[in-house]
Image 1 (tube, rainbow, N blue to C red):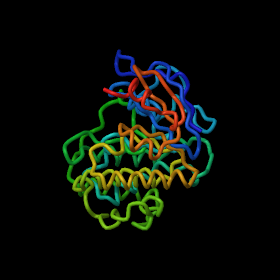
Image 2: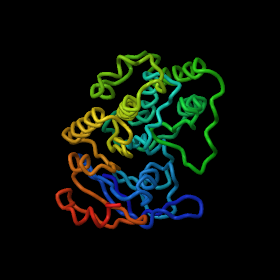
Image 3: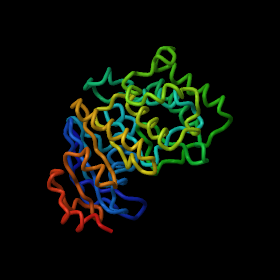
Image 4: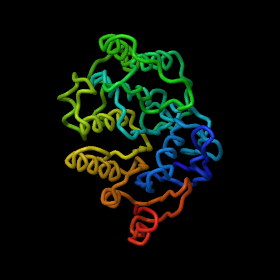
Length: 306
């Protein structure tokens, strides 16, 4: 179970989160709502360690993760699909998914409790390979796959060289993880819900449509078989048919009953179709919480209507 206790965080001198407390239980879909600028993305970044907490506590499965690095949180069972997808645009679909496997290293499988593992040599090599991947297809800074580095750390190095060099590094990193095995190393759990992806293994991520990139972002994080899945506005800017696919994926994960989901989403219709429990943020604090059935029109008008 994820527990967040009196969490405080922000950017520079500006506080954003002001004592947020919430919990997410296994098999539960917890939805995080609020108007723009209320701290939703800041909260999930702080849970993943992308943004350092200034106070409070983040705990998962009985372990205190508050001071742990993003990669350690990912290896402890947390998976993160950030807002805007942030796939590696210059790497292939196959390479993007294989990168997601790094988060599972050291966990000994889906349900291994295990202690958090140090990076070690393989982690250093994978980190070097990831850092060389540089910018995406539109020149933006490369995302930090699965568990992201702190935003206050130095900016990721820019890509030095062409895609061939990047692909070679990715292949080396994948080989380290999979004992040198090839594309069959991609777990079925990562792609079974997205049958279009295997037909695109050799295409660059940046050449996919927005909806296909979102499917790839899901597959990348599912490759690590996370026990807690954090989704930051997964339906933003994609076509309705892909939104329906994502809804089906969330329902399928929920039915499986082993993975908890923390969902940030603007669409009330979508939230009501998949969610169990709701937290509404206002000015960086929890203003309302309750079962999905209690989210009535009066609550929507008070806290969500613009």
